[in-house]
Image 1: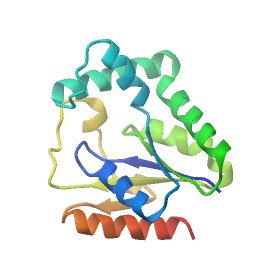
Image 2: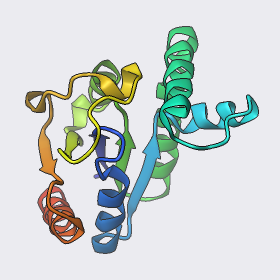
Image 3: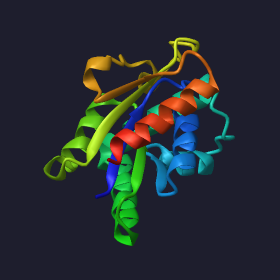
Image 4: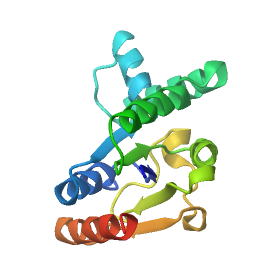
Length: 170
């Protein structure tokens, strides 16, 4: 079985670091995002790659427009998942997404095989308002299958990643 984990959390909450720790405990971990294709296009439009408030707003708005136009972010992620799953099984694919409607869409695509879970990384040490709809939307923990609190530090986050991997791949 290939596991799909839709990971969410505010900017700077530790999502990428969590995935990197997961990679230490399983060599079949992949890290993709619904914003990857948008970043490519933003660079072509002159974005400098900096994820400050101005850059985050640009990415959020480009993503919103492309979702309305042709669901590019979702199609791109589903294609990546398809290709990863063609190569082998027992992969753990982390899919970064911040919008709850999009998270529901992804989870719904894999509802028949019960292989998709949602994960929220919370961190009370990060700014709660970054000035765009993607980052600033409500993150109700009731919506997620798993919630990891990243309020203590890297060692604790690594322990949480190890436990998470062991719990998912039984």
